[in-house]
Amino acid sequence: MEELLKIENLQVSFSTEEGPVEALDGVELTIRQGTFHGLIGETGCGKSVTGQAILGLLDNNARIRGGRILYREKDLLKLSSRQMGRTIRGKEIAMIFQDPGSSLNPLFTIKNQIEEAICMFRKVPREKREGLILEALKQVKLPDAENLMYRYPHQLSGGMKQRVMIAMMLACRPQLLIADEPTTALDVSIQAQFIKVLKELKDNLNLTILYITHDLAVISELCDYVSVMYAGRIVEDLSMRDLFKNPRHPYTTKLVNSVLGANTTLDQLEEIPGSVPRLINPPKGCRFHPRCEEAIAVCNREVPLLKEVKADHSVACHRR
Amino acid sequence: MSSTLMEVRNLKKHFPSPAGPVKAVDGINLKIEQGKSFGLVGESGCGKSTLIRVMLKLLEPTEGEIIFQGQDITKYGFREMRSLRKEMGMVFQDPHLALNPKMTVFDIISRPLKIHGLARKKGELMVQVVELMQAMGLQTEHMIRFPHELSGGQKQRIGVARAMAVEPKIIFLDEPTSALDVSVQTKILKLLEQARRERDLTFFYISHDINLIRVVADIMGVMYLGKIVEMGPKALLLKDPHHPYTRGLFAAVPEPDPDIIISEIQLTGEVPSPVNPPPGCNFNPRCPHVMDRCRKEEPEFKELSDGRSVACHLY
Image (cartoon, rainbow over all chains, first blue to last red):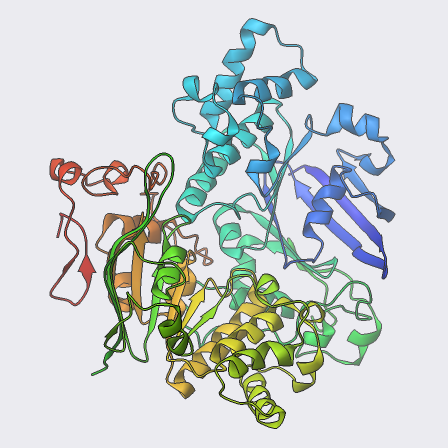
């Protein structure tokens, strides 16, 4: 399968009052056309920063210290912000955020907002726009689209708003969708409907998604490949099946065993001692070594690199 | 045979609003057994947080009775409640907001002891705080720290230590792990369970996370639009959920094992507004088994022969 996006050795730091925070330290990521790629990790591991870096949406105090983000072999980091806005953002790569309520403008109807998105990148005659809007709303299975498009965001529920966001995205026909915790604000029954919509879009439109989440259970429903992130680095890259059946990195293993599932009991759950390190002064060598039971002397000195253990499975660990 | 510690009968809490009363809690009946762990699940807005606030008498109930250790506390005023407060603890959802940022960990944990006059001298307080911190797996040198110097998991453990300080009979836990990462969630859950066994505590969990309730609860209740639709021993509900909402809710939970294929979605549509709930059974507009009767007549919450209770015309 063709590589759509490839991130090489991406390094991002934020300047803060306490000193530089190395949020991303050599992130490597490859997303293939037509796949759903999960990026998982705990709070503060840099997963959202990775998503923002791809679209050039980093905060003002961020500095990209190195690396490349190749989209169809073109380095996005070399584009000006004007070029990003005109040719990439929204048009080729789109993003949906955690809180659908704050992503929509409360003063305009759904129709206005989708229409604006359509006209950003394409010349569509006025009489054809409504058809496109309806088509997009129907693709995300919103009921009664004809009336719904005249409503305002406050008249819709969270789940519906999140689907409107996707409809808006689809109307611009992007190649890659970055979804940053899109279901965290939704209830389980609404989340299940949302996941179903995404799955159908994958089958029908050959959409590629980078799905950023901390929820491993959602990953298992949706994704083909997964990258596991810890303290600003990718520690393991593997297929979704291997994530649950054959994880190799000690962090991934612990993480998978701490997830609550249908048949888990309290005794089976594993705990990871300590807590996630602060990135102001991260541990030397492997950043997981202070919490790792298998750590040896070398883990404290050298940064482990991602190495392939078998096809589609790479691990960054000195012990593997 | 365990005894009933707390009981709620036909409890209602309606909030006035311009559009009519919001029926946040609308006729709840439940019993909490001494030493057991009760887990209540429900989606956002179903009234579960309001329910525990009413049970703790932080909000006045509109109707119904609250019975704690055989006494009807529904009509108790502020003074009478004050002596009962030490029997009931609470752990809040967001540990970052639940601790006073200007107080040290020692002050936070010892405050309830001082308020209830359980220990007055600094030495006595110190002994108890150390014991509580050790029980929660906290390093005692953190006693002089402030909340912002600690991680989320440590803060939540301080929240639990504070709730346990006055040796309550029952602790209410409002989504105790939802603000925490999975890697620290396990530790809290294990510490809670250990404390419950050692101190013979009763827990009342509420959460939107069905997987959490599955792991921690002995008795499980499912709430929908201000009412409990099904309640019973956990194993019974998990093996064979009866109420169509319970079934749909369980089926909607994403499963972290790729070998378990989750069944087709059963819950369509959205939760109706509690201002103007549908007539008859609340759940009828979303129910796949809806009958004429469901639209007219509200189902009774009745106990079945296997020990569970369910509010549905099918049973």
